[in-house]
Length: 226
Image (cartoon, rainbow, N blue to C red; front, side, top):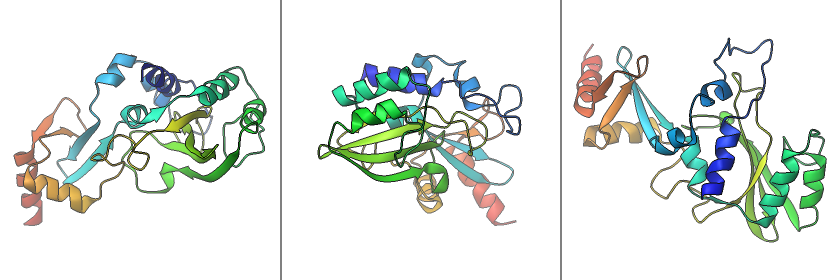
């Protein structure tokens, strides 16, 4: 697991550059923010957290990409060899239905029985993840693997890390564990608030300010009567 954490931390802090037309400003890109944090910082952050916009009564759920990736992925010999080749590569012209893959690394996968099942980007669907992920689901020798890139830029159109290969763990449908999904809809969130299952909320605009579940419930009821 330690190896997984080091790899994911390296991806989260990977410099994916600056584009003239992006909205990152001087230091607003994901990789710039993440480089101020240590591996311990990521390891100690909550698996999920909730933010509350007091003015408009909006609740936002954020799932840690670090925990999402490290709690249920594995590294085997194929992953190690592929990722090592990726480290020393500077060409990304592999003829594969995926992104961020070097030709040499792809050639290594062709030594195995390989099928690219599908390619995806979490930006295109419902997701509570703290950062966008892009990747492809693979079957290698009848086992389930996943190629993953983390979005470290400002705009979703660019700023992705090089792809890394991981083997899926036991809860491949849920990634962290069977009780913590990548996405939770507003109905379920409101139900959790009503039942008091969410203890603390951080202010959406000021992370030094927080609210209890009761304070959030009272504010939401107040807005309903307006």
